Length: 295
Image (tube, rainbow, N blue to C red):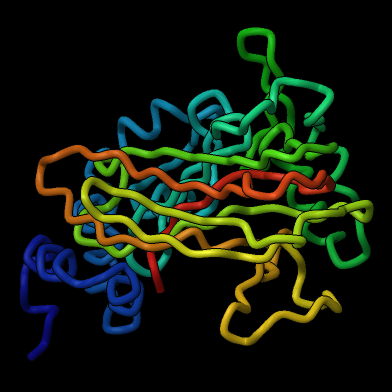
């Protein structure tokens, strides 16, 4: 069948029931299909239902000329809620993903400078390395400081600061997010995003307990706080350690859950704790907790 015989609005309506990937592929079918696939009516259907409310929470306003352009801009993490969270969508599906900054987490005694140290991320994670030169040149076009309520926020996805554990015997980190903020009918995974300082000590003397709770659903496990290149030996049955990310950080799987969101707004509680040992530990750097759709 020749699609060009159909009205463009009809073609747009058909494409809107497919996927963002299919909408992009329609451009090679014909000029009519390309115009239909680029229409706002198609791409608004792929955007989250509450995208306007999300845009109102952005630290830096987005400029866009079409819903398709908006869609792809939202595929890159953007700061919201005064820089305490970042938001993005999956390029393939449009599913929502969030990252809660360290400031948005509940970290026991994090306000006590004897135990924790808050450090600007612009000075630590944005250092110019040879493999980041191209990335930094692109960021130079958009990276600037916004002043809101006397605070400085970096534009883009980077949080203003992270927190580093100086020394403590009671390690407890918790994050929370409402299910109505997430995409419905989606399996989500939660990850604690960290780094280990060169001086890190005592973190893997005992395994840390991890948990994820949503309503009546609970999942629990243990994890060893060390990189995979550690020389410490544990049994294969217990082996569960952080994994390195492409951005240079390390992620710790806290659990996964299915978000049906049938109208009951529940709270997702994610945590990591090691409170059984009485030894001191330090050198853990926390960026935040990421909640993303499972691939």
